[in-house]
Image (cartoon, rainbow, N blue to C red; front, side):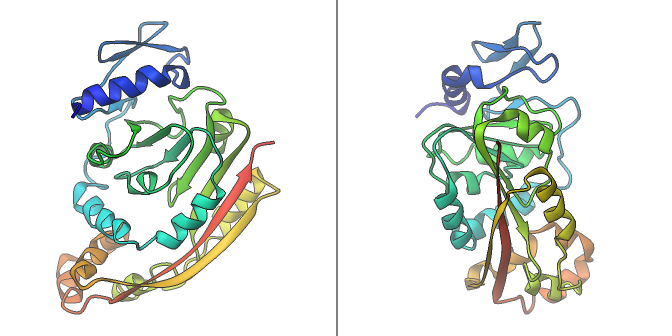
Amino acid sequence: MLKKIDKSAQYLAQNIDLLRCPLCHTSFTLAGYALICENRHTYNISKKGVVNFLTIKPDTTHYTRKMFEPRRQLIQAGMYAPVLSEMQSMLTPGNLLDVGSGEGSFLELLDVAGHKFGFDIALDGVNMATELTDMQAFFSLSDLTNLPFADQSMATVLNIFTPSNYREFDRVLAHGGQVMKVIPDRYYLQELRSAFGLPIDYDNGAVLAKFAENFPDLTHKEIKYEFALPKHLQQDFLSMSPLEWQISKADKLEIAKQPPETATIHVKILQGKKS
């Protein structure tokens, strides 16, 4: 089996024309384990197979392995299977970019006739993504406002529960390409919100309006169902979301005595196409 660094180097060698330097926007060449642009800006592939394109420190304190591991367990257990099935039906051939890819499970579970790319600002997330050894993809630490991908290099941009930058999405999308954005709807994870003493209703109006502003001809699909949490994953459910940051450790210990047994998945999948 190839080392992670070699696997990434091979993947980049095949797709070098899909990247650009985030500092000067020129093209890269690959020299050993380093990406070098025309102006000699250099980015090294880490032993984990990740390239750090950030000009700031990556996030190592908020979105950590402690949160990503429970999330991975629940995704792999099928918590989002109906959502992913609908997204799969909407995919078109071509390169796929997962924005804010976290630990990589969403990208792993989608099949596409093209190359896969994911990025995040969370160091633990991208490092965990490279542990999904059966997936052929390249992961990086990158800035949403200045993506290291070439103009018109992607057929689909995935935006699953993460912030957007529509200027950059438009730049990297090929003509006829699409953005698929998944946003929480009113009752998303209401059991978790209820357990934590937070308002159950979620208002996605501002996010939806911003998407519609950029894609006036958008289509959307609402999906709502209950997922029965396996007994061994009910504690993981309490740790999978940033919502837990809003409660004390003592309160969480009390909630853990009787964790939720179901999770409501209520989302909208927004689809916008570049004209």
